[in-house]
Image (cartoon, rainbow, N blue to C red; front, side, top):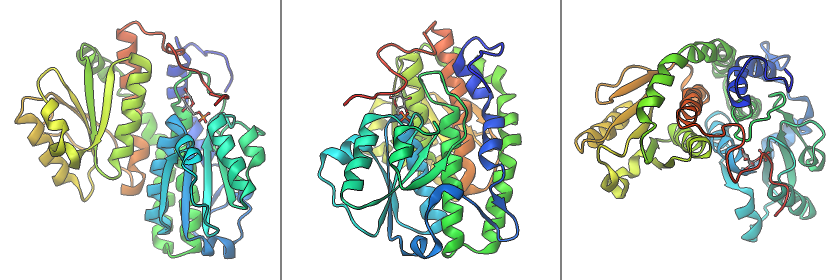
Length: 364
Ligand code: G6P
């Protein structure tokens, strides 16, 4: 991969398409089939230390923060360690309790975002253990951290992050699997996750083949002034990132909400001019999510679903291939990157350099 546009009109499009090889690269050489685990050489965390971690706190900004939210869920699911993600700037300014049994993870594409770097430096000053999940090799955050893992997404030029988001989430899945197999994740579950990870590049390729259909859908929704994105548990951070992507590149106002919270406010917004994008994975919450679609439809809301099977209540469904429940969030956001891209294209936006935004924010 290079900085060359390689026949694409924008870097964003090139980088979305590059996800097949990027995900292949973050997995390469790391899977250990014999012990149903992965090797992350740069982690600098021996098994004894890994067993003593009582909590994981993930810090990042923008898209990296959203990748961290999915990462926190993966860590809780696979390693059963309480984990959460917080914007690095919020963390810095609220005088957080720095606990010796907590492992801190700083997430950054560039490795130079000032708020993340300053949070890492403050944590280090207080004696905390900090890992980095970073794309740019040798960057400031990678150098400051005690250890970590590179996400190997390759150069990302477009201001809005796509392939680095996906690779960061995959890197979190690797970290979660690694920690899980040192703790209580069974060999059978380790194998199941490994097989799921191996299926990802091929499944991303399948999703990319649906681009002509997504392009048509984007044209139909591009007249919206505002859009609601909903998801539940695993689907919620996917909805948040998809909503961010749409507002960054298309300038359409978008808001993400947990599907379970609809009745506590957002339902008041539903009318034909306010479309909803719903993340509907085929997991144990499928029926709950279908009930949310019914509530929206009963109020004449337009619905675009991203799901593993066509949704009867939705006006349109983008069907994505099914992976393991824990890994589905990695795939479900990808069609919505294409949706944001084609919406912005239909509206004639400056896709690679949205107004008022910078690729990395190296000032306070
Ligand atoms: C800026 C970019 C975002 C990015 C965020 C964090 O706001 O426009 O796309 O997600 O910074 O950047 P980082 O390099 O730390 O991941």
